[in-house]
Structures are given as structure tokens and as C-alpha cells.
Amino acid sequence: MIQVQGLTKRYGPNTAVDALSFDVTPGAVTGFLGPNGSGKSTTMRMIMGLDRPDAGQALIGGRPYGELRQPLREVGALLEARTFHPGRSARAHLSALAAAGDIHPARVAEVLATVGLSDVAGRRAGTYSLGMAQRLGIAAALLGDPGVLLFDEPVNGLDPEGVRWIRDLMRSLAAEGRTVLLSSHLISEMALTADHLVVIGQGRLLADTSVRELTARGRSLEEAFFTLTEGASVHRGTAHHAGHDAAPERNAR
Ligand SMILES: Nc1ncnc2c1ncn2[C@@H]1O[C@H](COP(=O)(O)OP(=O)(O)OP(=O)(O)O)[C@@H](O)[C@H]1O
Image 1: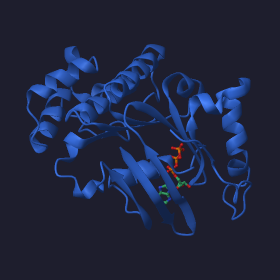
Image 2: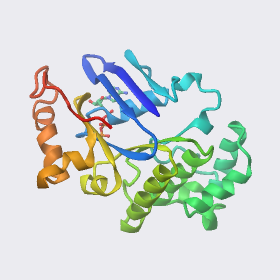
Image 3: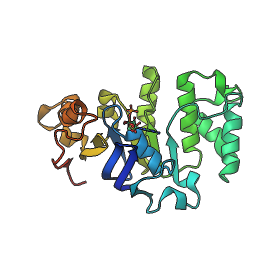
Image 4: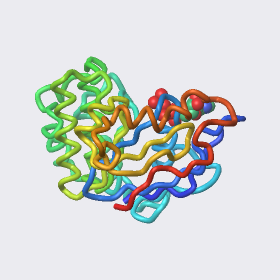
């Protein structure tokens, strides 16, 4: 379970994340949608303790990231690809992470197999394609077998087979009862992958609802997304925007 409570982050005069609150529940894929610059990555970074909020808090299983006793076993994240040393092999990279996180070394081979990198695990990761780099990032996120997972744009740069692989992986992680928060620009992909959606614009919550609810009455998810985010995109960078005072679309789970 992830709880985002009144989370706020300012960069100078810009408020990147603005009193944002939502929960991400286990056993489902929660899609995290919003236009470019709406604050998705900043929110995920704050959940992972990489950015300090100016107000509010993000909790993982009831605690802020910094207070988790065994963080790699509790939460895994793919926030940006290529966070590994290019001269190291995938196996060496994962082995170092496992050693640092007190994770059994046998997990390295397991996660390499899960992401389909077993055959190239000895190669320098710097030679990997974007798709392979994404898979290595996902392997690192899965290493501690955590119950909570965050993926920021995992399908970026992947070919159709890779996109489908990610979709199946997300769905199976949720089916195992894990909490999965997934950001993506690909709305059509989100319609296929996510059960629940959190939509933000200008750092504010625009909707916290099920995909089914948002696409009710024959509306496509794309239409619903544009209707929700219209005000937030058109007036981006100004103090006033449509929907400023509107209550976000929300439904109970
Ligand atoms: N380190 C930083 N310094 C200054 N401004 C920042 C910083 N990081 C993010 N921002 C700003 O905060 C806002 C939110 O950015 P963020 O990357 O979180 O959005 P996003 O929804 O993930 O966008 P995208 O979909 O393009 O990845 C943007 O206006 C961005 O320019």
C-alpha cells in the first residue's frame, strides 16, 4: 500500500506537486497519468525518498521510505533507465545491489530469468539497447521481491513485444497481490494494463477512479484523459487554470 498525503514540492516559484493525496492499493495495477511536466516523476521520487517534500508525506506500508527497515525488500522502483555503471555486467550490477541490500545471491539469477536477460547477463550493460536497459532496471526493482513496485514510463523505447511483456508482467505482479504504480504516456496501453487510474495535472489530483468508471458510457480513455487534463495543459504555468476549484473525479474502491 502506498499513501500519498498532501504531498507538495516546489521548485522556486513553480509548484511541481500541489497538495496531492491518493492511495495505491494492493492487488491492482494503478496507472499514473498526466501531461508532460504534471509532476508524476517528482511524486514517484518523493515516494522513494529521493526528493524531500515541502509539505505532506508519502508512506509505504505505513512508513516513509527513510524509515523502512529493509527498503529493497519492501519497495522496488524503476525511475529512470541506465542507472547502472556501463562497464559492469548486468549480473555484476545486480549482485552488488543484492549484497548491499542483504538479499540472497540466488535472487540475481531468478530476476535475470524473469526479465529475459539470462543469456546476456555477462555482457557490459553499457552495450545494452534501451529495451534491455529497461529490463535490467526492472530486474533491480524485483530483486528484493518487494510487495510495492513503482515503474516510471517502463515501456519507453520498447518494441511491441517489449510493451506486451511489460503489460503481462505488471498484471502478474498485481495478481500476486502486490501494489503496482505505473506511469505511462501511452493511454491506449494504460487502458489495457491498469485497473485503477490516478490522473494529475499541474501537480494536482484530477481523478482517482477505476478505468471502468472513467470509460463508462462508451467514452474512450483517451477522450476521458483529454477532458480531464484540458484545463491543466492549456493554462500550464499560470496561477489560474480550469478545474482549479473543481473536486477531482473520485470513486470508492
Ligand atoms: N530538479 C528540478 N528542478 C526544477 N524543476 C523541476 C525539477 N524536477 C522537476 N521539475 C519541474 O517540476 C514539474 C514536474 O516535473 P515532473 O518531471 O515531475 O513531471 P512528469 O509528469 O513526470 O513529466 P514527464 O511526463 O514529462 O516525465 C515540471 O515543471 C518540471 O520542470
